[in-house]
Amino acid sequence: MSSPRLVNASLKKTSTSRSDLVYSGSLVLAAGLALASICAIVAFVLIEALPFFRAASWPEFFFSPAWFPGESRFGAAALLVGTLLVVLGAIFVAVPIGISAALALVFYLPQALASRTQAVVEVIAGVPAVVVGLFGLTVVVPLLAGVVPPGLGLPAASVTLGMLLAPQLIVNAAETFRAELPELLRVARSLGISRETVILHLVLPQRLRILIGSSTILTGRAIGETLAVMMVAGNVIQFPESIGSSVRTLNATIALEMPYAEGIHRSALAALAALTFAVVLALRAVVPGQARR
Amino acid sequence: MRYLSLFSLGLFLLFAVSMLIPALRELPRALDAGYLLGVPEAMGRAGGIGPMLFSTLLINGLALVMTVGLGLPLALFLWERGDRVARHSLQRAVILAIDLLAGTPSIVFGLFGSIFFCRILGLGYSILAGAATLAVMTLPLFARLALDAMQASPAAYRPLARSLGLGRRTTALRILIPSVWQGLVAAVVLSWARATSEAAALLFTAGYATRWPESLLDSGRALPVHIFDLAMNVSGGDAMAQRAALVLLVLTTVFVVVCRKFMQGVAQWQIT
Image (cartoon, rainbow over all chains, first blue to last red; front, side, top):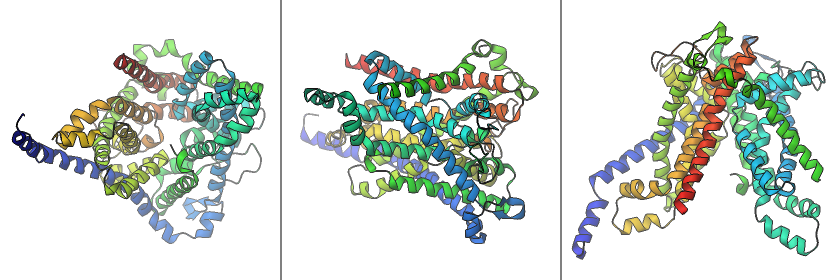
């Protein structure tokens, strides 16, 4: 390799060698296949939903609660309202608990205890959704049955879904609070500002955007969660009449009716899936870019 | 403020404990060979989970092979084009697609899989269809994590390797991948955890037969589906559901924790 000509020759040889061409070719092939499969899903759901979109009456789809596939009546309003209520309820449970628990982790617990607790929270964040659903069914529902009968319904679904979201929110919020924290605390101490003031007037307002961002991402996940909610929601299609009322979500409808759906019914289920796509996209549009990860 | 936040944390931990205790209570009965390898009886009220465990490992193993087989080239492809014009159009479009799919409900993947793999490709309710559906589901997640890991490698590697006369294949296989393998292992492990916890996407693709699968075209019930079925459709199935949940927790959570510990250990070992 001492002579320039040799180096030059080897450079030429390696950069256009056959193995490199094979490598690049197979890379493009596999990447193309991966991309195609990703695009196929979106395209597929839309194509599948097309017959329904052509035949459907839009006002009925969005405003009628009457979902009777047997009579070809597809009103998704009750499902939409049910989904939104469950998700709002879950956010209502998860966000206050998540953010204040993260405050406890970062500001109030001693260092050693905090890092151990955080490890526990991380483990709980990885618990499969169906196990959380089982917890909802065996613990939350009997507990709520005495307070807001019959137990299966909106409150149980909200608590279960909230429990599914809370650990991830705690981890995210704690990470947000920790960024550049020692510096902030040092400056605050030198100015004689109390810890409460630091939290309420500095940390929370300053990190609000990021907190809202990660809560919005979790909202997306909440909308997508199917089986855990289905296990505890009762699944009656109706506008909720009372606080303990049974509800059915969009996804639960897909899961419940897919096994026997044919023709326009199947297409209507795909339309529900397309609706959740739209919600996910809309959520993504409102999340501030820096908080997306 | 202090007491409020400590109370919230306590409340959360209380819920978490009451979530894990019923499963952990089944530990002695779950550690039984007759249970782990046995066939379920009376719709799962008695007997074991052998076929489900086998189906779970088979489905997820296959899905992982497909995910990495397609996702790694995709990530490499995007990494190689990182500094070109395409960054602003192709890469962005791909990342948008990836993010969209990462936020897509898993039941939508189930819907897609049951129509495309099961009906159109004629695979029926089968392990192969379930694995393919899971692979499509975890592919965006894996590709995104792998790309992130690759982009964490020093940006100078690519021009340096080129100036040394190394080909693209050599750069990728001998320099890039060895330097970021921990991130890639993390991506694999997270994809595994996500796929193993999945029930909704498998319900209508891999099916729910409880017998031992005889081929890849046979239906096989994964553990999360089994838990779901025991909890919802089998009266008196709660204890068995908790027992299966414990096994599933070991397959997902504990596995991930062990991997993380292992990788931290490796990282420290490399520094010293």
